[in-house]
Image (cartoon, rainbow, N blue to C red; front, side):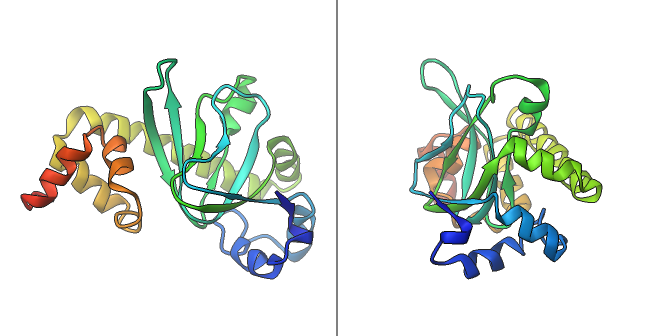
Amino acid sequence: MTTLEHHPEKNIIRAQLRQNVLLKDLGEADRAELETHLAIVDGNKGDFLLHQGVREMEQYFILDGILKRVVSNPEGKEMILRFANEFDMETSYAALRLGTPTPYGIVCVTKARVASLPLKDWISFLNRRPVAKELFEFCVMRGMSEIMAHTITLHLLDAPGRVHRFMRKHPELVDRIPSKELASYLNLSAETLSRLKKRGKI
């Protein structure tokens, strides 16, 4: 982990941050203030950025790669709630507001780079910028709505229908997510997903 200010690729990272959904409309003074709080984290496939059940939470701005939000039971069975890629973000905002441990983990699906800061610092930053806070809360609610819609989809659609919905909703991710991860997200076995592809069902 390296602070943005001391990172050898800080100019490239600053350009990437300007494209993030939450940061692209910030003024220069606001952006400069936020950057003093940011650390750059590089993760490999399978690395946890956030573990389920912790109270020390971070706000993540995705610079490169794909992350997943996952819930695991004590036996290790995992459910993927969502994927997020470049220009998106990950957060545990709801847990912080509710005063609970984070109910999910955040894991690198691919090699990934994120800019992060403690979630409390991010909220403090937002509390002084109501327009940015409104956008952030909208993105949080939209993400929760997408997770709910996905969960309903798992019960209402058959296997090809689930795949088709994902391809329609997330065409930018279709060729980037490993088949095993995609199959898990859609509650399919990797073999079923492969069979559907071979039969031309998807």
